[in-house]
Length: 270
Image 1 (tube, helix red, strand yellow):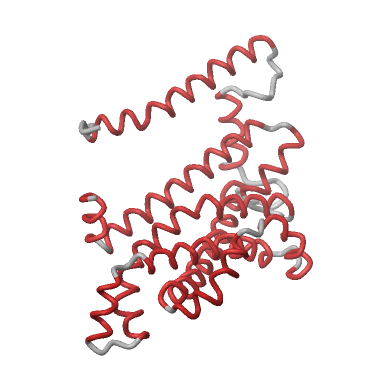
Image 2 (cartoon, one colour):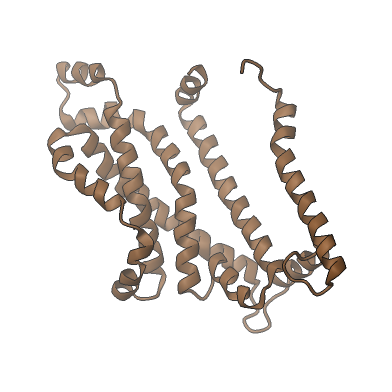
């Protein structure tokens, strides 16, 4: 447990599972295609290349658009809007709950109970209220992610050393000043961590909503082509979603350490 790999070794061991999984796939694909050349479950590399050339580089005969680009842009727009709204609401709800005992006593049980409601169960209600357009998809992400961020923020505020709050009050700080100048600077990096942890959940809600009611988007395209068993389209889309999620997670992590170097130092020491 005291031995740490070098940077090169860490990169190698990090990539090894992906390389082994890719090798396993193509070995299994070659074996299945040898028995049945028309097998669609495990397409060959040539099938992937042909499908992605059609989706990502050839304009649609019907609309003239690059479907891969249109789907990616639509999904990222919905995801970004939903996550941004969730972050703002989670911060506005979670910090007061963690800082003000009366609010915590009155609203914390409600927020905890609301976070247990399966968002997918209320998706039909969202479609009834907001229609089948963009608003219902964004609302699903907000309803699913906001309680998680709010509860995490409440917990992070409650974990702040009580001595800091007492000293701030002793120096004449009001609740508002303490929230702005003592609490927020310390919970902002933890807020970004909470966003990273909830991105996977946000993607689940987004893909589910797009699959049910949409005319473009990564989730829409996956569920559209599944009826044709087009694994040569489905698998690259799944890999692309994974790469996007990883890139967002990595970017937020680097942003956190760039904006709050003290937070990175504190985690390395612990």
